[in-house]
Length: 257
Image: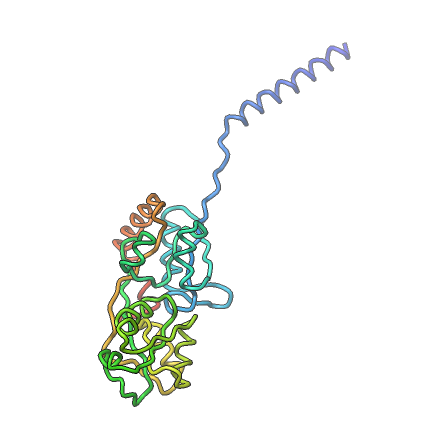
């Protein structure tokens, strides 16, 4: 009798294992959220800059809003500006957002999303400088400081250096170009208007010229091979622009005047 009860107990236990296994085998494992890696150069306030150890700014918040909309996690990596496009092409990063302007040269290397912000390339000079307008930069002998790889670098190279109308001094950071201006190593700095305002505020004796150097549209760079991600980001951007999210993010950092 005891042997029979023991055998029944063993059979029941085995049946429970079989049922559990069958049920578990049909259950779908919970999928982990995919992480998108964004490359940026966090030396470009208010678009991207460090707040402690965290990268914040317009591009950081726009990227987070896009990832939230698409159901992705976001990881942001700080690198040199001129390493962003090579990193995207090499598959190290999913996309790049760094106050990046769409240019024909860059379009040969990567694909760009729809534009989400407009930037202005401004000219910083010392107060009392003989440089009064953008035209004065090409009058000959002017040394212009830029951040390497930025559109300020590209424009000044094409318009001035390639035509032997002046020289372009390239720096890893916009702040380094401004320091060169304050010490007299360059005569002017061409850089985006928003960081230009920060640099002028923090460095006595500098001013921004009233005439801008160029007006440009910012977009997100994606690998030419990743058309699926490009379309996803464009779809999310369209919705975020329509519902006012992008406008609110930009006005948080650049209050409407």
